[in-house]
Amino acid sequence: GVLRKGGPKPTDGSNKPGPDLDHFRFESEEPGVEVIFRSKYGETPREVDILLPYKTTDENFEAWQEEWVAGGLVHRCDGQYCVVWQDRRSGLFHTWRAGDPGPRLPCPYADVPARKDKGCKAIGRLTVIIDAFQRHGHVTVLTTSLHDIMTIEENLRGIELLTGRLRGIPMILARRERVVSTPGPQGKRVRRKKSLLSVEADPRWVTFQLEAMRHRIAGLHRDWA
Image 1 (cartoon, rainbow, N blue to C red):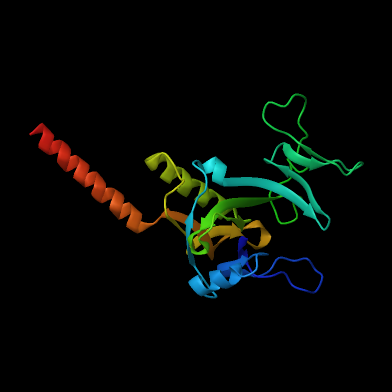
Image 2 (image 1 turned 180 degrees about the vertical axis):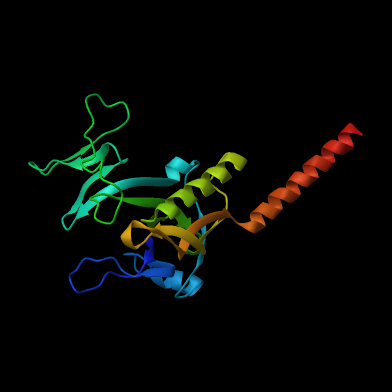
């Protein structure tokens, strides 16, 4: 399934994005899974209990710039060079991986300032397991917000630095209201409230870990005495 931040796209054929929400919207093609999600979290969930399936940040979270048209993906890049792109003549896709020989295809918009009409836009994908489903099925959390991408990256790397791993740690995926700087009229920046993503270790797990640490320290003190 997919956890989204926005509402469904309008049905007027404009292909515009749906309205931004202050809660999660879950979609799945699996029969009954959406029912399980709603029975656990209701219609407007702002927090979801998750686990991460992999050990490291890079395995669980990826962020790229991507260009899409009605027919699908055109290219995926890091802002400078493409890692996936479609040959315009043959329609075949090419994939670049670290260590591949030969030149890399430059992003056609590498020198274009980031703005709404830029051909490729940032997209982040976080892979999670939702506790409520009681199964090892992966759910993708999608975001096109640079603020979300930076926050998730910081959250996960912080937890990984402290614990040495991300897999097996109960976490909370949440929507949190923050005031951020956004593009405004006539090129000026304005401050607006946005409902952004955050990932944190479950406080109950953190409390348990801290208590275990206190017991270990107390045991060391007794041994030294």
